[in-house]
Image (cartoon, rainbow, N blue to C red; front, side, top):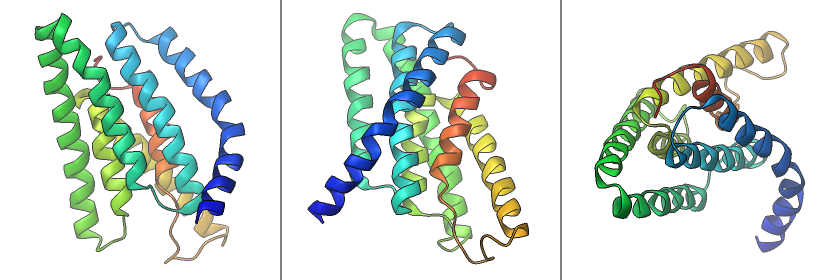
Amino acid sequence: MEKFQNRMLRQFLPYVGIPVVCAAILIRLVSNADAFALLRLETVAVLGYAAAILDLKTKQITNGLILLMLGAWALLITPMLYYDVAAAVAALADSVCGFAMGGAMFLLVYLISRNGLGGGDVKFMAVSGLYLGFGRTVPAILFGSVLAALTGLALLLCKKIGRKDAIPLAPFLYIGMLLAVFFGGAPL
Protein backbone atom coordinates (compact mmCIF):
# COMPACT_ATOMS: atom_id res chain seq x y z
CA MET A 1 0.00 0.00 0.00
CA GLU A 2 2.86 2.38 0.80
CA LYS A 3 4.37 1.84 -2.67
CA PHE A 4 1.02 2.67 -4.20
CA GLN A 5 0.73 5.89 -2.19
CA ASN A 6 4.28 6.95 -3.04
CA ARG A 7 3.65 6.28 -6.72
CA MET A 8 0.41 8.27 -6.52
CA LEU A 9 2.24 11.22 -4.98
CA ARG A 10 4.95 11.13 -7.64
CA GLN A 11 2.32 11.09 -10.37
CA PHE A 12 0.11 13.72 -8.70
CA LEU A 13 2.61 16.37 -7.55
CA PRO A 14 3.87 17.54 -10.97
CA TYR A 15 0.32 18.45 -12.01
CA VAL A 16 -0.75 20.31 -8.89
CA GLY A 17 0.81 23.69 -9.51
CA ILE A 18 -0.55 25.03 -12.76
CA PRO A 19 -4.35 24.75 -12.36
CA VAL A 20 -4.26 25.60 -8.67
CA VAL A 21 -2.17 28.72 -9.20
CA CYS A 22 -4.37 29.76 -12.12
CA ALA A 23 -7.53 29.22 -10.06
CA ALA A 24 -6.12 31.17 -7.13
CA ILE A 25 -5.12 34.09 -9.37
CA LEU A 26 -8.50 34.12 -11.10
CA ILE A 27 -10.33 33.98 -7.78
CA ARG A 28 -8.30 36.94 -6.58
CA LEU A 29 -8.98 38.92 -9.76
CA VAL A 30 -12.74 38.37 -10.02
CA SER A 31 -13.72 38.31 -6.37
CA ASN A 32 -14.54 41.36 -4.34
CA ALA A 33 -14.60 39.33 -1.13
CA ASP A 34 -12.63 40.03 2.02
CA ALA A 35 -9.32 38.32 2.83
CA PHE A 36 -10.95 35.50 4.82
CA ALA A 37 -13.36 34.67 2.00
CA LEU A 38 -10.52 34.72 -0.54
CA LEU A 39 -8.46 32.39 1.62
CA ARG A 40 -11.43 30.01 1.89
CA LEU A 41 -11.94 30.01 -1.88
CA GLU A 42 -8.27 29.50 -2.61
CA THR A 43 -8.08 26.66 -0.08
CA VAL A 44 -11.05 24.87 -1.63
CA ALA A 45 -9.44 25.40 -5.07
CA VAL A 46 -6.32 23.56 -3.89
CA LEU A 47 -8.04 20.78 -1.97
CA GLY A 48 -10.80 20.39 -4.55
CA TYR A 49 -8.16 19.88 -7.21
CA ALA A 50 -6.54 17.20 -5.04
CA ALA A 51 -9.92 15.46 -4.69
CA ALA A 52 -10.52 15.64 -8.45
CA ILE A 53 -7.13 14.09 -9.25
CA LEU A 54 -7.58 11.42 -6.56
CA ASP A 55 -11.03 10.54 -7.87
CA LEU A 56 -9.75 10.33 -11.44
CA LYS A 57 -6.88 8.04 -10.48
CA THR A 58 -8.52 5.81 -7.86
CA LYS A 59 -12.28 6.38 -8.33
CA GLN A 60 -12.62 7.29 -4.66
CA ILE A 61 -12.19 10.27 -2.36
CA THR A 62 -10.45 9.22 0.82
CA ASN A 63 -11.57 10.09 4.32
CA GLY A 64 -8.08 11.47 4.93
CA LEU A 65 -8.63 14.18 2.32
CA ILE A 66 -12.06 14.97 3.75
CA LEU A 67 -10.53 15.30 7.23
CA LEU A 68 -7.79 17.51 5.81
CA MET A 69 -10.44 19.76 4.30
CA LEU A 70 -12.31 19.92 7.62
CA GLY A 71 -9.12 20.68 9.53
CA ALA A 72 -8.06 23.40 7.09
CA TRP A 73 -11.49 25.01 7.36
CA ALA A 74 -11.29 24.95 11.17
CA LEU A 75 -7.83 26.53 11.00
CA LEU A 76 -9.22 29.28 8.78
CA ILE A 77 -12.26 30.11 10.90
CA THR A 78 -10.62 29.97 14.35
CA PRO A 79 -8.45 33.12 14.11
CA MET A 80 -11.40 35.04 12.75
CA LEU A 81 -13.31 34.35 15.97
CA TYR A 82 -10.67 36.34 17.86
CA TYR A 83 -10.47 39.49 15.79
CA ASP A 84 -14.00 39.92 14.35
CA VAL A 85 -16.63 37.91 16.18
CA ALA A 86 -19.62 39.28 14.25
CA ALA A 87 -18.07 38.49 10.85
CA ALA A 88 -16.95 35.09 12.13
CA VAL A 89 -20.45 34.19 13.29
CA ALA A 90 -21.90 35.30 9.93
CA ALA A 91 -19.25 33.28 8.04
CA LEU A 92 -19.84 30.30 10.32
CA ALA A 93 -23.61 30.41 9.73
CA ASP A 94 -23.10 30.69 5.97
CA SER A 95 -20.61 27.81 6.04
CA VAL A 96 -22.89 25.56 8.09
CA CYS A 97 -25.77 26.27 5.70
CA GLY A 98 -23.52 25.40 2.74
CA PHE A 99 -22.41 22.22 4.52
CA ALA A 100 -26.02 21.23 5.21
CA MET A 101 -27.17 22.03 1.67
CA GLY A 102 -24.31 20.19 -0.06
CA GLY A 103 -24.50 17.22 2.27
CA ALA A 104 -28.29 16.93 2.24
CA MET A 105 -28.64 17.16 -1.54
CA PHE A 106 -25.98 14.55 -2.19
CA LEU A 107 -27.11 12.30 0.66
CA LEU A 108 -30.60 12.29 -0.81
CA VAL A 109 -29.25 11.33 -4.25
CA TYR A 110 -27.03 8.69 -2.62
CA LEU A 111 -30.01 7.12 -0.84
CA ILE A 112 -32.34 7.30 -3.84
CA SER A 113 -29.79 5.95 -6.31
CA ARG A 114 -28.86 2.99 -4.07
CA ASN A 115 -25.10 3.60 -4.17
CA GLY A 116 -25.15 5.12 -7.67
CA LEU A 117 -23.28 8.01 -6.07
CA GLY A 118 -20.26 7.34 -3.91
CA GLY A 119 -20.09 8.16 -0.22
CA GLY A 120 -16.88 10.11 -0.84
CA ASP A 121 -18.75 12.40 -3.22
CA VAL A 122 -21.36 13.07 -0.52
CA LYS A 123 -18.70 13.94 2.06
CA PHE A 124 -16.67 15.96 -0.44
CA MET A 125 -19.63 18.13 -1.43
CA ALA A 126 -20.71 18.60 2.19
CA VAL A 127 -17.26 19.76 3.24
CA SER A 128 -16.92 21.89 0.10
CA GLY A 129 -20.13 23.59 1.20
CA LEU A 130 -18.25 24.83 4.28
CA TYR A 131 -15.89 26.71 2.00
CA LEU A 132 -18.39 27.84 -0.62
CA GLY A 133 -21.18 28.89 1.71
CA PHE A 134 -24.87 28.61 0.99
CA GLY A 135 -24.95 30.99 -1.99
CA ARG A 136 -22.34 29.11 -4.02
CA THR A 137 -23.01 25.49 -3.03
CA VAL A 138 -26.19 25.01 -5.07
CA PRO A 139 -24.74 26.53 -8.28
CA ALA A 140 -21.60 24.41 -7.83
CA ILE A 141 -23.71 21.26 -7.55
CA LEU A 142 -25.83 22.24 -10.57
CA PHE A 143 -22.86 23.18 -12.77
CA GLY A 144 -20.94 20.03 -11.79
CA SER A 145 -23.90 17.70 -12.19
CA VAL A 146 -24.83 19.05 -15.62
CA LEU A 147 -21.21 18.75 -16.80
CA ALA A 148 -21.01 15.17 -15.49
CA ALA A 149 -24.32 14.23 -17.11
CA LEU A 150 -23.34 15.70 -20.48
CA THR A 151 -19.95 13.99 -20.36
CA GLY A 152 -21.51 10.68 -19.36
CA LEU A 153 -24.03 10.96 -22.18
CA ALA A 154 -21.30 11.76 -24.71
CA LEU A 155 -19.22 8.80 -23.50
CA LEU A 156 -22.27 6.52 -23.75
CA LEU A 157 -23.08 7.69 -27.27
CA CYS A 158 -19.46 7.16 -28.33
CA LYS A 159 -19.58 3.71 -26.71
CA LYS A 160 -16.58 4.51 -24.48
CA ILE A 161 -18.52 3.40 -21.39
CA GLY A 162 -21.50 1.16 -20.72
CA ARG A 163 -24.74 2.01 -18.94
CA LYS A 164 -23.53 0.49 -15.67
CA ASP A 165 -20.04 2.03 -15.76
CA ALA A 166 -19.20 4.76 -13.28
CA ILE A 167 -17.44 8.02 -14.03
CA PRO A 168 -15.63 9.99 -11.32
CA LEU A 169 -17.77 12.90 -10.16
CA ALA A 170 -15.24 14.99 -8.20
CA PRO A 171 -13.56 16.50 -11.30
CA PHE A 172 -16.92 17.79 -12.49
CA LEU A 173 -17.82 19.06 -9.03
CA TYR A 174 -14.47 20.85 -8.90
CA ILE A 175 -15.17 22.55 -12.23
CA GLY A 176 -18.67 23.36 -10.95
CA MET A 177 -17.17 24.95 -7.82
CA LEU A 178 -14.85 27.11 -9.91
CA LEU A 179 -17.74 28.14 -12.18
CA ALA A 180 -19.87 28.96 -9.12
CA VAL A 181 -17.08 31.13 -7.73
CA PHE A 182 -16.62 32.99 -11.00
CA PHE A 183 -20.16 33.21 -12.37
CA GLY A 184 -22.79 32.16 -9.87
CA GLY A 185 -23.98 32.45 -6.36
CA ALA A 186 -24.01 35.18 -3.82
CA PRO A 187 -20.70 36.64 -2.64
CA LEU A 188 -19.30 35.29 0.59
